[in-house]
Image (cartoon, rainbow, N blue to C red; front, side):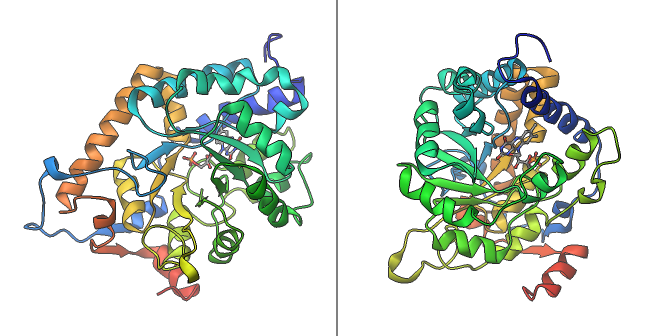
Length: 362
Ligand code: FNR
């Protein structure tokens, strides 16, 4: 941390620790649940890339993936948010900032978040907060950011892994309902890497969220990050807590009023967009999640790694490559759009199959 960091010492240190430790996690390759999702190859079923439309059924987004919420509050975070804003502006993908709760306590750090909106004045920008803030404070955060939607993170496992973390999660559901009533933009409730279950998603749908972001295990792991920040061994056993994004997609399959695929709820209630994130490494993972019902796919660690290592031009090039490669994969699979991907033959194998059987989703 430098003396120019606008946030208080401990908060700034934590935010910068998250960035450093998340990047260490993204340096190795392991087999993830996404590797157990396979498409049956039909050699004559391919289509033409020229007719493929990669837009998302969610929020009118022109791209099927977005940058999920990460940071803000420090000088380094401001630099990252500026870079992400430029990448989003140049490529048209939606983008979120990290948790803005700190802005309520230290208004002077607001520019480390709003730099993202300034770099990307016309794009789709999501603000981010925890589930403890009041409706009025959530509305303030949205206003400060000039946000088009608000991500609210529910991160009980991460908090439990932190010695200084929250220990009372009992008011989150009611509080999220109050936030929805208070803000004038869609509220997207997300995990931060432990996934959402069927019951959680159904409860969120019933209180009227605009979307859910499954944010599952398999990528950035806050159980591991929070214990690595400590000098003792920490609560290392919380590493790997929760379910993967793919398991969470199996959890949500066919839920009324969730995602553009599922049946519409009684009385034509508005659907909650189904967003998946967590552990996305490349365009095939995006296509796998879309085929399993996601309306769009979020990426955090993989993009942060490129931005912090190689800079914003490299990330702009990568995002453009992903858009092209997703269209290529859709042509290979013979689908013209995201809705069409849901009709492809997808196989779920290995431990994921066992998970689906144990949960009765077979
Ligand atoms: C995050 N994430 C996150 N999420 C959130 O809602 N608010 C936040 O402030 C943060 N902070 C944060 C910092 C850093 C450095 C990373 C890498 C991630 C979680 C993020 O949005 C996402 O849900 C998870 O990282 C899972 O996606 P990946 O990283 O596996 O693609």
